[in-house]
Every structure is written in structure tokens, then in C-alpha cells.
Length: 595
Image 1 (cartoon, rainbow, N blue to C red):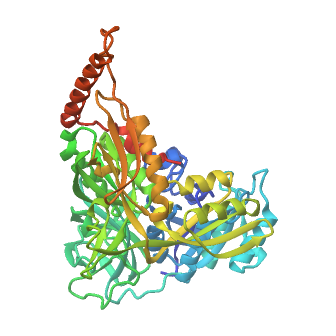
Image 2: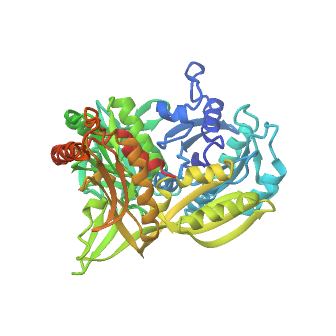
């Protein structure tokens, strides 16, 4: 155990985390020259295209240092705020962390939030300043920021460039010298933390774990504590670029276990593996079920693809345990699924993967968050969909989730960012100048307000300089109303939303105007109305296509024309009673782009 080092890399998006991992793998000869490519650990095409890490990965390296062979386990982490639970589990499996900061951009919001996670687990932090070879690098200023943040000495900060490989050998030396060896007792009852799982269509689910105490051998009878399921360890081993089977692994080791699990819900990230014969007394702390934050309906464009869509989502769930779904039906869109996502990026990626990996065309409804509705009888109902809200006469009050948002930006954009947050019902909590021209602002705001377009607006008003991070702080009572959209008096459930009372009128007005542009004209008038309960707050009319029936009447008495027009009016009325209005796909998407 003295020669094992377990560490992770924490950084904001685009600060060079995956590139640094590539260099470490090259320097320790973990990957052969012919296997070398950019972002080795990012295995999905989507990750490589967008340049972000979506899944956390683990890999083992061997390094000869001062005549001794060391084993280094790197547990790579995603950088985006939507995947912060995965980051917290990866951090719990390590003793040290490389804090990578971009020398051209300085410290950003994600860096700080992940750093606090690492400090909470008492990890040894090794600060690394990356991209030192860039012309726009500001090494001295960024060093000052790092010293302010973690209180280290100037000589502790390693200057490096992952692109050119400069300084990477110093990083490896620092990992061996500074990161403590794992503590643990190989003789104690087995405790192993699951920090990730992947699905293999031939072997079932492969769980990645880090052994805290005890020893695990091939063929052992093991049990997962949170799910209380028991399995045999058919194969265990360590993770290099490929999986390498081993007979035994003991405290401090990071590896994988294949035990023929077929159902994704049986393997949960953060769960503890122990022996059935000699179980550990308690699970490793910090396990929680991942809670989805944003909900949206996913419907097949062609109703016949419903079963295929179900199979596709189930397969996706095997690879991504944080996706939650249940069947639902809508009068406008037919049968589909109500899915829960960690955030908007997660939702976008699931849509993209459905399209690429399974060739599914889907319609996604307006995303919304989970509300808690309290009835007059004192019951609490969780509402994921506005149509699930109790009737107004039974409803007592609604609570909505609140977040604590941290925004770091240049001080010149402070005014615009404050205005944006206050427009979104934010409450300013704190404002700290990190340096003379960088400011950190902390707001409390409703999650439902940031679900739509908050991040896009924040990026555009700050010219891309603001970074944003948030976490949930609980539920608070809110004055929310259900806004229905009616077409010829019939409610379209896929367009209804829960919205704050003060914004309902403006939003309803805009919705009606937008829909009147998008819904094609029929042979009869279409009334588009926005309503709160039985009160209509906005209306637009799509005019009917009319034929000039009076063309053949020239001269003569006016009553002849009037008679023909009355006759036409009756026909239109009858048509309207039997006619139905087709809502085009663009109308469902337009709601997302309302400005």
C-alpha cells in the first residue's frame, strides 16, 4: 500500500483536464504510441466533439520513481455543474487532487465548488497552472488568485503546459511526494466504494470501485449494501486502457467487478460493496440517490415508435444511472415518457444520444422543475408536470426548489449580471472581489427561473467571461399559477406551464402571439387563449381563409349579400365544431425561445 497513490483532477470546463490526463498517460507509458489520440479517456464521440467530459473515467498508471515502482490511480471527473454528484463520489475515492487552473482565464466558479468538495474530504491539493505556453497567459496574477484561494506557498504551484508536456514530470513527482498513501486495513471486513458503472452488452454492468478496507478475491460472495442485492464476483481486475483481470485486490486498490448484474438500478454510484460472510458494520458515508432537477416529456414523432423509444431510454439508463423516466400520455402528443434530468446540459445530451445511438426522432416538451403542492387536506403531492396540479379549490400553497448560485465574472459586467439575476427573482446574498477586476456574486434564486435560458443570457451579457455554478438549498413557498393555453376552448396540455403570478400575464401574451404566427390558417377562425383557471388573460385569433361568396352579386339589394354572408358564417361555425387544430412541432419548441 505504501506505493499506491489515488488522485483525481478537478478543474473548470476547458481548463485542460483531459489533455493533462493524456500527458500523464504518455509519460508513464500507459498507452502505446499507436493508441495515442487526443482526449484518450473521453470515449464517447459526443464528449470529443463538445470537448467536455460527461462520464467519469478511471485508469491505472505505473511509474518508476527513485528506484521504486509506484501505482498511480487517476480518477478523471466531469467538469460541468450538472454532473457534480459524480465528481463528489470520485473525490471520495481519492487521497489527493490536482487543482488545474487555466493561466489565461484564472479561477472560475466550478473550480471553487469542486475545490470545496475536495477540501471537505481532506484531500491533499496540488495546484497546477496550465496553458503557461499561451501568449495571453497571466502567470503571476493567476498565482496570486490560487494563493488567495487555498493559502499555499508560491513554490507549491506547478507551472505546466499539458499541450507541450512542459512541467508534467514535476506533477508526477509532486503526486508521489505530496499525496498520502491510502490508509486502510487489508485484514478488516471488506468496504469498497462504487464511484462509477458502465454497461457492457455482453458482460452486464461493470462497477468501478475503490477498496477502503479489506480484501476482495475472484469468486467471492459479495453484497451491495444500499440495494441489499447479493452476487458472485465473476471477475475482478484493474483498469488500464483495457481491463486487466486479477485474482485479488486489497485496501487502497482501484478496480472493476463483473458480477452478471443486468439491471442498472441495482448498481448505484456511492454504494458500498462488502462480503456476505463477514460484512462491514456500516456503509461508507455520503451515499445518496441522485435526484433529478429538471423534468421534460419526451415523445416519439411517430406514435408507432413508442416501444422502440422505451427500449432506447432503458438502454441509455444502463449507461447513465441519473436518468429517470416514467410513461405518460398527452392529449396533444400521444404516448411518451416523463424524464428527469440533472440539468439542461444533461437533457440536451440525452436527446443527442437518443438521436445518434438509437436513431430516434423525438419531441421534447418545455422543461420544468419539481414542485411540491400542499392540499387543503394537508397532503403533499410532488408535481413534475403542470397537468398533475390539484384543482385550485383543493390547493393550499405550492413550494418550489431554490438554489444558491455562484457567479464569477469580470467586474465591468457586474451591473448587467445583477439586473439579470434580479429579473429572475434572485436575492443577492454576497459579493466578494477575488482580485481588483474579478468579482464573485452569490444569489439565491428559484431553480425554475434558470431552467430556460438563464445560462445563455449570462454568457452573452458577459461576453463569455462569467462562470456559473449552483446547488439546491431546499424548497420555499411561492406564488405560482398554472397557465393553460387553449385552442378553440380546448386546453393543449403539452403547452401548459407553472409560472410566477407576476410573470404570467406577460408570458401568456407572448405565447399567444408566437402561436398565432406558427399555427397555419384553417377554413375557420382559431381562437388562441391563455388562461389562469377560468380567467382568460390573453387572446389572439388566427383568421379563417375566406372565399369571396358575394362576387356574383353585383348591384341589387344589400340584403342579398348579407344573406350569403350569414350562410357562409353558419358553415364556418359548423366546420369549427368538427374541425381540429394541428399544432406543428415548431410551436412546442418556440416556447423555449420566447424572449
